[in-house]
Length: 449
Image 1 (cartoon, rainbow, N blue to C red):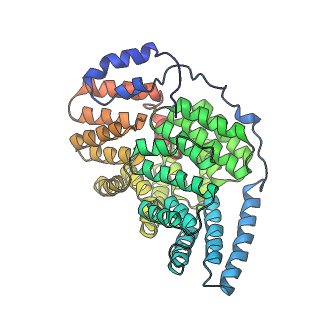
Image 2: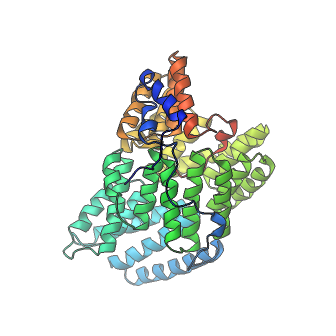
Image 3: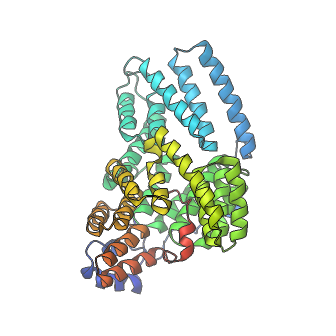
């Protein structure tokens, strides 16, 4: 995987002169040369993209998912001990869960696949499906174990299955903080999962220019189903958000809504976008509709932040409490999948000590950029700035480099009474994301980090 071409700008030169003052904080930005021209194909206009096959709206997709699920349930009713039918049921449950975000479908899919694996003689059974589902739920050990089962299969796996397995190995290495290993696993290949994960690696190294190029090349390669196109466009919007380019994020978010009308996730991004654009009234209206429709705790958190920005404390408290209840239920059911989100909620609205416990546990399991930031933030909030610096420096050494990490470095130095280093770290964060200190940055809930 290459680096973007181009000469270093005067900003990068200025930072390099200051690197000697703050070890491991700003030097990585020079190495990746974020400020030069991209030197690749022109970026895509999202308005020009069109979808291909598949249900055209969220409602159509949901009806198809419900119908497919009913058929799969009926087959399992007649053949309860056939792992192939159980695997089909799990696929139907996961497909609907990816559409709706419904935790109940995720729990049932997990149980169904566990049953299918249990009744299958080693090394037969739905190994690839189990690996994918476990990874979706952030159960890294279980996913790795399922992949070992796949590799032990008597019949050699198909090339497409091996590509998908390599994509998952890449994601597992990434989430375990082994960025170099993930980088190598995703370095080649045109499998969609590999390419999108490759783009995410670039972005979490701070190399958002190359991440944009990667996703744009994916979008040029072929037409996708409306739901897939919308998902890719939201990833593209997330990169724009990480760069503080709210104008670009708005274009991509609106394209995602056009591609797959009715998607609650795309509509959530759009509500957030209105908030970033200063239209809090419209953001509130959209979040309130989504809150009633979905009950999703991320939506409730987004609505809470908008209400706080409007000064409506009573309503904000109502939705904050509602979100807390939902997060607690989700964490109790699927702790690996939701601990990071709940820790973020607690840091904003709950007990910082409880947030620290959760954030530390998640960092121990998955020490990549997001848990690194959450753990460092919790440490800073609890007056443990020295430990926060160690965690962040370890993250930089592993190759992760994001504006949020630099922001927490700045906060740690400030808490330690070292304002010069704090200022340098914050200036470095602003080079990557000029909006990092904008008060509206706190309204960002949806960013696919």
